[in-house]
Length: 92
Image 1: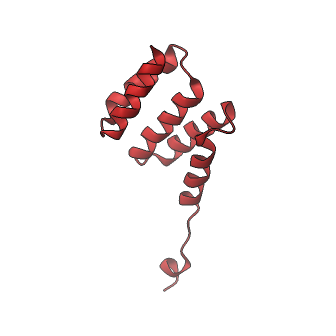
Image 2 (image 1 turned 30 degrees about the horizontal axis):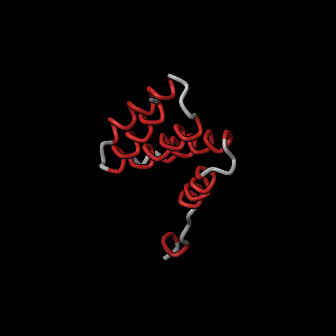
């Protein structure tokens, strides 16, 4: 059942139902669901809300559990976004 909940959360997230997806992921985590996948989904939910620190935190948790999973690449992507610096924007 928990796997089904995470699949449903993914579909809700794709449909833009972020709050509903988060409730399912939180419930799955509370019941001991696949933590790596759950934290990865939480990271994606935070991304939808532009909560970059929350996103990075959840992706890192997922990557600690499953180092070869998709969260590792997502961590790198978020870090690159946060570290972006365009010199011309600050020195006209």
